[in-house]
Length: 111
Image (cartoon, rainbow, N blue to C red; front, side):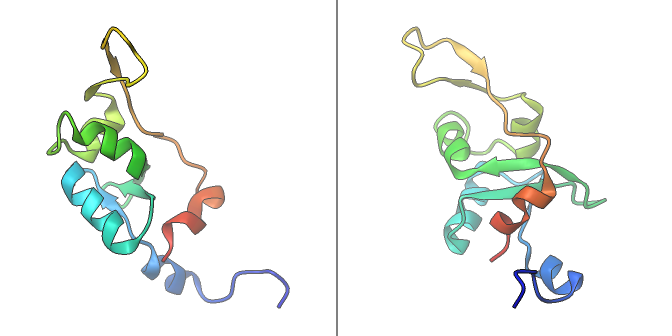
């Protein structure tokens, strides 16, 4: 084997798991737990466009204040959260990485 990935594009794409913009934090954490992954891409359900990437760590932090918030709210920065290291407890906008280098990240999304 020469180090290249084996299989067709269709085979690899069919194994990719994604979250949709309307999925809640609770639903996303459930998917991650079931699959044993710590990050997943978020796509537009209608067009399949990649919107960003969300991590389990980010979701767990945001779950404390709004477990039913959607991926869209998180990625757009609409959801406010309190930074744990902020002694004053001031709210900050916190959002996941809206731009993803697919080629660098694709292996993390496959199971």
